[in-house]
Image (tube, rainbow, N blue to C red; front, side, top):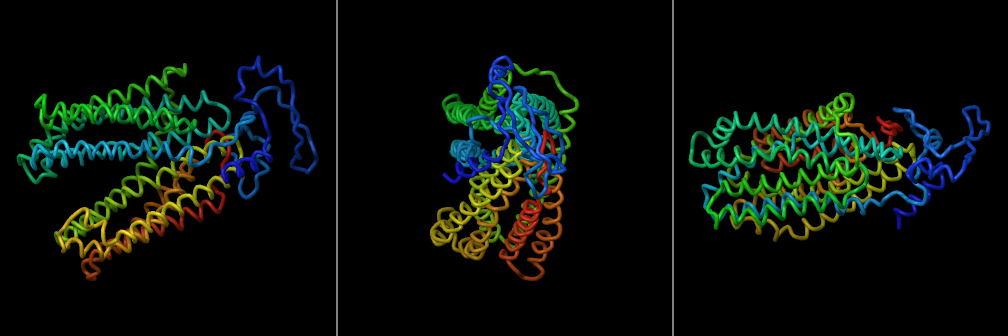
Length: 508
C-alpha cells in the first residue's frame, strides 16, 4: 500500500504521455494533449504533445527540485511504478538459485571423498572469480537499460542488453583461453604444489570454464531484463538451468561413473542452456544484433568503475581471512562461519538493491526526480528493516547457530567473540546495500568506486592489519569490517541526501 501511495502521489505531479501505448497510428487517434507549465521566467506556457515523447536531454541534473524533471516526465498511462517487493522477491530467487545449487553440487561431490571435495573447492574458488569480476554485465546494464525504459524507449533498453551480450561473449571466450593456459599454475598455487587435490582441481576447472561465456550471457540477460522490470523470465530461466544441473550432476557422477568431471559437465550443460534461453529472449524482441561501438565503450567505462569496486571488496575479504588464518585454526574456523553467514544475509538484502537499480533508473530516465527520491528512501527503509530482522535472528540464535556448523569448542568460543559484530553489521549493511543500488541505478558508479577505495584503504585495512600486533583478536578483524561498512554507509547516505545523483535523461 505504501508503494502504491507513493507512486500515486508522484504520478499526480507528472506529465502524462503515452509513448508506450503503441505505434504512432494508434496514438494519433488520441489527439493532442496540453500540459500547462511555467517557463524559466515564471510565465505559464502550453506544451503540445503530438502523440510522441519529447526527447529528454541527456545528463540534465535536477538537484533539490523536481520542476525540471516534470517538464520532461514520461509516465505510462494507467500503469503505476512497480513496487519494490514485486521486483525484489523474484530477484532474490535468482540470487539464491546459484548458492543453493552449489550446496547440492558440494553434497554430491562430497560423497566421492575428501580428495574430490578438495578439488572442487580449489577449482571452484578460481572459477568463482569470473562471475564476481564481471558482474558489471548485470549491475551496470540494469541501470542503463532502466533509464531508456523510463524514457519510453524499450528498444534502446533491449539494445543495451544486446551490447552487454556481445561483451559477455568476448570476455567469456577470453576467460576460457586464459584459464586453459593458466589452469595448472593457478591450481598449483592454491593447492601448494602438484598434489592429488591439485590434479583433481585442474581437471575440473578445464571442463567447468567452458561454461564461462554462457555464465556471462546470463549476467547480461539478467541485467537488461531487470532494467525493463521483467524479473519473472530470469527467474524461470535460472530455475530451469539450475534444476537441470542438479538433476544431471548425481547421474553423471555416480551411475555414469564420471566422478568429479561429471560435476563440471553438468555445470557446463546447465550454463549453456541458461545462456541460450537469454539469447532467445533477445532475438524474440526483434532488436538489431549488430555490435554498437559507442554503447560497448560506455558499458566498458561502467565496468571499469564497478570492477575496481569489486576488486577492493575482494581484497578486503581476503585480507580479513589472511589475518584470521595467522591467529590460529580456531580463529580462522570461526571467521569462516561468520563470513559465510554474512555473505548469505547479504544475498537476501541485495535483492532490495536490485529493485532500487531498476526503479531509480526508470524514474531518472523519465525525469521523475521526486519519484526517484521517494524510491530511494523507500528502498532504504526496506533495507534497514531487513537488516534489523537479520540481526534479531542472529542474536536470538547466538547459542544455537554456530553449533550447526561445528562442535569444536575452541571454534565456538571464537565465534561468540565476533557474533555481536556480525549482528551489529546487519542493519548497517542493509542500508548500505540499498543505497548502493540507488546509486548504481542512477549511474553514479564512479562515486561508488572512490568511496569503496577510501573505506577499504582508510578504514578496514589499517584496523584489521593491526589486530595481531595490538592483540585485538578476531574481534579486531570484524571491527575493521564493521568500520568498512560504516564508512560506506556515511558516504552513500550523504551522496543520496545531496541529490548529486539525480541526473535525468537517457544517461548519467
